[in-house]
Length: 277
Image (cartoon, rainbow, N blue to C red; front, side, top):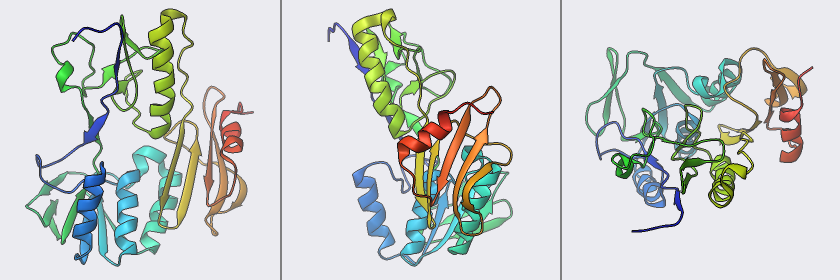
């Protein structure tokens, strides 16, 4: 099919550990299938302790299920860093969610059993929340650049090749993909400009913004992740789990985090963008 310009926005799909089997959460059909299973279940295992995994675990617990989250490292540690992850995991435990760290890996032993080291866990439902896979198989023989994980490599203007741009979960920039809603929206605009204006287009500048609701915590984040060290507490208290936090980074940037703290997004972004002193 001939074209004057091509926008690649084929997104990504849920990663599965056991071929096509297993419950995931990516599409409306996935959500409906999971809801149907949870309606008659009494227990659940969630494989993966990222945002999605912890949100699924929260929903399962709210429905009255016994829930265990299993990951290679403590939940949320890779995404958020230890300080904020520990706060979230403490809230999860308070909600009755079990956590199992399996540094040697996990083996799925059928529809209801999982081996973690020497232990075998059983549940009525196993949910996979172990990341996503970019939909780029159709590009393998195209000559377009793909990274080791299959992401489509784009430049600062979301250009892949002459007449070809990309946006969203499929894009790899500076060696990594960032499959989040905000990036998909902003990269769409940048890809349009890159296709129409080429090298004269304004470079895409990420405006990192993330949010999650889990275990009674409403967490909003403006700035780069993960976070290292101890933050400045600008308002609130750890004991109340209502906080406005700020991390300083090498180079003068910062990340601002609101935990159960009402603050307009634009103000949170200003805190995250302000040069550190």
